Length: 157
Image 1 (cartoon, rainbow, N blue to C red):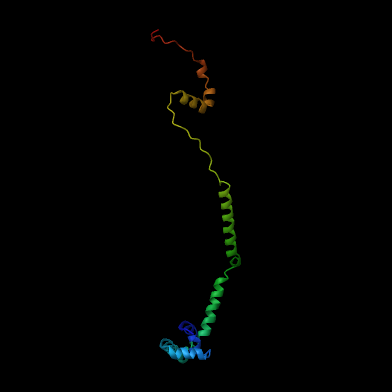
Image 2 (cartoon, one colour):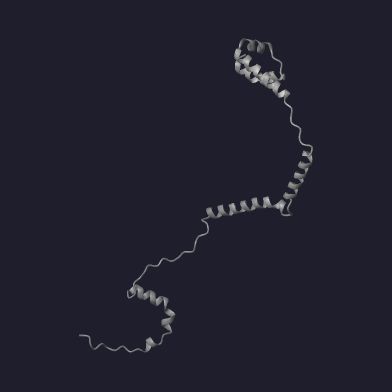
């Protein structure tokens, strides 16, 4: 046997759980490191055997039971208590499924906003846009139909 094999078995040997085989005894007697380690294990086990657990206070059980009753009363706050956590889990799963579905299908698309370019008034495009947006106003404006066009006399022919 080698030192590693003996070290694995030393706690059981020191506690008296396993009996040492002749091969183990021969190694422990020939190896100073293993014999010292086994002696340290024996000392530790003897100290553990002498240790006494402290006695709990006389009212420990009474206080423990009272505390358990308090905690049990805190947990059962109402009829909604038993459904709260599963409902949260189901709602979270539903939100995830809806989100993944919308993401895969392209999602909810925002409405398209027409892009208009600034057009200067007085140009042909500007006049057409003005006529298009004010069509109702111009179609009901009878004054424009009654105007007569007067020739400009100041202009040079």
